[in-house]
Image 1 (cartoon, rainbow, N blue to C red):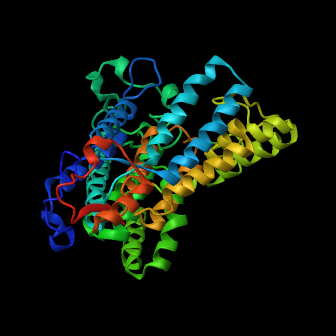
Image 2 (cartoon, one colour):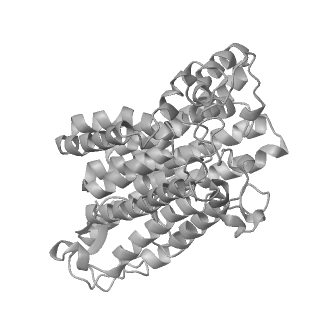
Amino acid sequence: MTSGGRYNLDRPVLTEIPVASVCPAFQSETWIDIALLASALFLQRFAFGKSAITFNMVAAGLIIAHQFASGRLLVQYDRLLWFLALGLAVTSSLLLNFDSRMLYSYSVFLAMYSLFTFSRPSTPDLYKSTLRGFQCLILILSSLGIVQFAAQFVIDGRQIILFFRLVPEFLLARDAQLGSNTIIPITQGSSLIKSNGVFLAEPSTMSQIAALGILIEVLEFRRPRYLFLLALGLLMSYSGTGITMLLVVLPLTALVDSRAQVPALLVAFFALTLIETGLIDLSAFTSRVDEFENTQASGFARFISSFWMTGEYLHIASPLALLCGNGPATMKYFNPHGFYLASGGTWFKVLYEYGLIGAFTFTCFLVSCFQRSRCPKPLILALFYDYLFTGDALLSMPLLTIMGVLCTLSGSQPRHVGIDEASHHRSSLVPGSSSKSRPSPRDRTYVVGCD
C-alpha cells in the first residue's frame, strides 16, 4: 500500500521484499499510531473552555477521519454488524427514556466506539514499531513524573501541574470536566504532591500508564533502563492502581512466557530496593490498604462500590429498565440507599444505562473487535482490567484511543493473492474510500490482500 492509500500493482510481491524497504507508507502508518497515542497521553488535560470536549477527542477524531477519507482504513463487517446491533440497543434506551440531556452522551458513545470498527493491514514488525513508539511516549511521561516529584523540594509542585500559569486557564480542563482529581498530596497534610507526569489527568493515570509500559517491556523488549525508569515513574505517582494491575497480570505473564520471568523479577527487586533504602515512602501505600473496607475511601469507591450498587439496583429496577436500561448519562442520578461512597465502574454503567440487552450486545461487539488482535494477551487483560474495574471509563477517550491503537487498529498481515481470490477475500472488508483503494485492472497478476 502506498502512502496515498492506493494499492500499487506494479510493485513486486511483498514476500520477496524486506518489510523495512517495502514503502514509506508503513513508516507513516506507525507515525499515525504514535500521533494518536500522543494525543491520548499529552492532550487529555486540555479542553475548549468549560465544555467537555477535550483536545484529545478533537485530535483523534481528525486523524481517524483523515485516514478513512484517504482510503487507509477498512471497516470489518463482523465488527460493523455488532456495532449496528449495539447502536440499536443504545438508541432504544434513549427513546424509551428520552431527555435532551442524554443526547450528548449518546452521540459521544456512538462516535467513540465506531472507531473500534476500523482496521488496516499490518505486519508483526509494523505493530512492534508502534509498541516501541508507545514505550518512548511512556518513558517521557515517567521521566517527567520523576523530575516533577524531585522538583517539589525546590518549587511549589502545584505550579508545575498548572504549567506555571503559562497555559491560559480556559484551556485547562477542570477536575469536574475530567471526572478526576489532578492535585493530590502523597499523604494527608503533606506538602508533596503525587506525580501525574504533568500532562496526565491524575496520578492514578500515571500509575496505570507506567504499569502498561512495564508489561510491554517485560513481554517484548526487556530493556533494563526502560524497566527502571518506568518502575520509578510508577512509584513516584504514589498510586496503587497500577500496582494492582501488575499484581494481577504480571504473575500470569511470567507463567505463560518464560522469557518474562527475569524482567518481572528485576522490576520487583528494583521496587523493593527503593523501598528498603527509604527513597520511597512505603507507608504511603500500606496506609491505603484498608481503603477497600472503608466505605468512604476512594479504594472502596473505585473497586467495590459497583458491586454494592448492582445489588441495590437489581432490587429496585423495573423489568423494562433492567432489559433496556435507563438511558445514556443517567448513572450519575442513581442514588444508593446505603451510606457509602459510590462510584460506578464501566461495567455497572453499561448495565444501568443500557440494560441487559445493551450489555450483551456491547460485550459481543468488544469480543468481535479484540478476538484477532495483534496485542499480546496479557496486555489486553491489563487494558480491560483498567477499563472495567478502576473507574468509569466508558467514555474515556484517552483510554479508548490507546485500546484502539494497540488492540483493534492493526489488522491482519498483507499478502499477495491472485486477482480472483483477492476479489472474493476482500468481501469481508469495507474500504474507507473505494475510489482510492480499488486496484487498477491493468495488472491482473497480484494485488495486496488481507490474510
